[in-house]
Length: 285
Image (cartoon, rainbow, N blue to C red; front, side, top):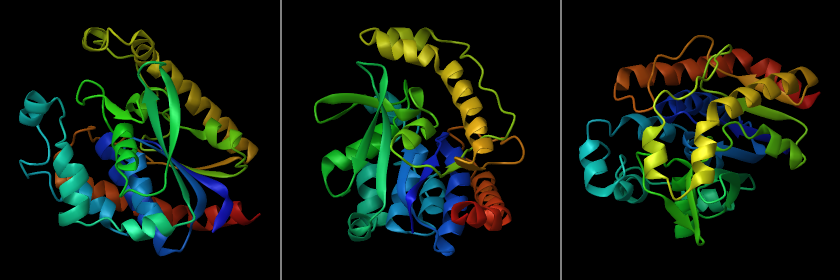
């Protein structure tokens, strides 16, 4: 284990299948880190990495796409959540594709779920130690709860949504915590520039009680692009090693085409394989 180094995982909805491929290859090679900072889908992938459940990420991204219990407009209209909360965070991990809770709890790797506090409009970092505890599972769910498409998640009295709104690439947090080397996995290609949201009206209406969160949503594109610039600078300084898609990923955050997702997963594995020798050299130098 590279105990003093960290893994930083961007979100991106179903693009997280790419990250699942990268992580599966690293797990097959026995690569481990002292800390993982996961955002949204990155937090979900981080949970599988902490428990060392190879293949589970791909399965959970693809096996239930046609299952009416999983997600869709009908769930959104009925409950306020696009993804069925009970199915995703109870039935899947406890029955259909069991999460290895024992391995997760026993792992020395620290997992931080990045969440956005809707009151403050600031990012917070929830350390998850045992997913059998409701507050930890809710902390994981909060990071992946997309604005507009999800209800606000309350954890220990605080209200949270998608961590990517306030900290999409938490490298600065990792460095501040003392990690001088970081593997950062992105789900967008190099050269990607985030554009300003075209229609911001729904967020202003839905979150009118949370002006700080609305401001964070409105500024998200600027925050993300600043973080990318910072990341590439840290790469030059040796504080970050980046694995990301070579080309533009033509997959939406709510992609339902399993074949496309499986292809993206294998792209992640191939990119991890191609970067493996350089990564090991970086971590051991």
